[in-house]
Image (tube, rainbow, N blue to C red; front, side, top):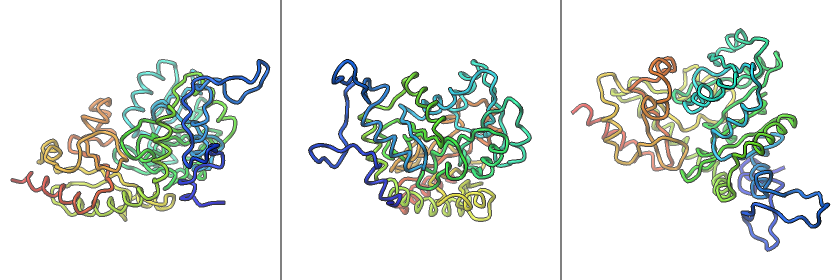
Length: 383
């Protein structure tokens, strides 16, 4: 049995072996596959239904998450869509009350049209989650670290509530990746990722991954993947597999930088509040410390009300103003007008999103250069 870091580099036990000895698995771009004869029972016939390159990646992510099976999709949203498509009209899903804006849009503008019911609850409060369960409830869905304020939910506690009532636990683990947490080992039934982020790691692909704990759930996700067809291309699979190989070394640098930058921001008078699970003494720190192997590299912070957040981001020289996260380069954005613009002003305030809130994806640059860039932009706010 090899270690996690070795598995990242060498791939799954089902890695495709090239007849010519190539170290990297071949890219199969074929859409269709020849039958040896008309009565053959073949593994591959059409690439939407199965592809050797995709199978390699799917086996790898299942191995890393300690799951039964993995599935690769054309985006994180396609992965979420496939997971939620297993439910039928009248089914109710309890949602964490602070979810990604794109997930919010998919639920409210698509799945509610098909009579699925959703109930938003603070998943940091297991008692509130349990109180919200009704006979129609089928699952609990939440993000391990919420986007954008990084509030931490205990996978163990919510999974225990779900199992008590015969419900599924569905976890979006994008911010942590299996390097920092494996939710299936903590009781979850389905874990999903926007692999566009840390798993890909280089802002050059869009992808989603799903891993299931049980075989029956795997069969349902495969049906959705094949029937809806939101598969990941072989070329993007190869980029993603290459990104996964360096996940551990990237995440170590990401986190090292994030700890330094969180401390810097805490010490600045212009910053009213820093949201980062690695800050001791907070509830999020306590929950995270019990269940994760690190605190990630996302930091959100609020500027004082008398300062101009737009002016601040516009004056940054090194850090890019951009949506998305988890890449080697540092990115910053204003959730109220960018990633979470789909939410109404009322829903934004309910989620703790103000015009002063900034979400900072800490990259792997030299931490001193990032601190210098933040400092010069904060300094000019007071001039």
